[in-house]
Amino acid sequence: MRSDQDADELLSILYHSLRATRRRYVIESLESADRRSVTTRELARKIASLEMNVPEHQATGEPYRNAYNALSQTHLPTLSDAGIIIYDSERQIATPGINFDLAALLIDTNTPTVYVFSSIVEESDNSED
Figure 1: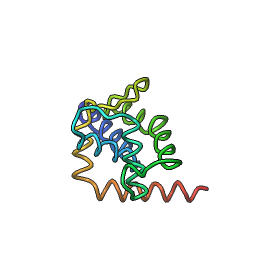
Figure 2: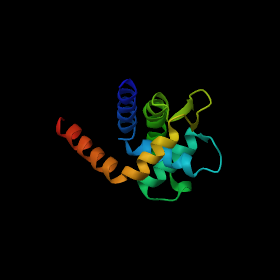
Figure 3: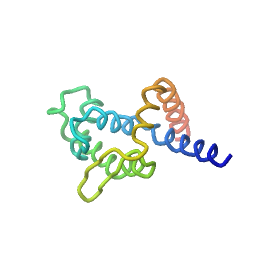
Figure 4: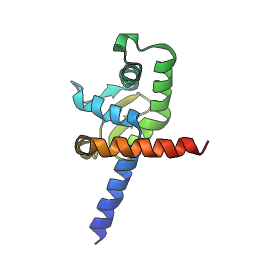
């Protein structure tokens, strides 16, 4: 019975970590990268380009800085705490962690669920303002 509780707890942690769109982008970026590690700068540029719907070389300025700060201060540490990535904050490098493949699988198989759940949570968070 203990292993069922552990599995449920792990899934809860993983789903919580996957709520934020930027965290899902990090996983998708690492999954499609040619190498095992990606810098925070590369991730921020990729995320800013996706959010702004522009080529990566045009993803600069405030949107890039916002993505970079959010990644280094919140999103990458959260993914690291969940074991999804290994985040070296000094070198600003992310590599896949022990739970990376499971998180990527959850995104692939539950994308509609993750996006719907995220929308509901974001709406409820915004309604408290």
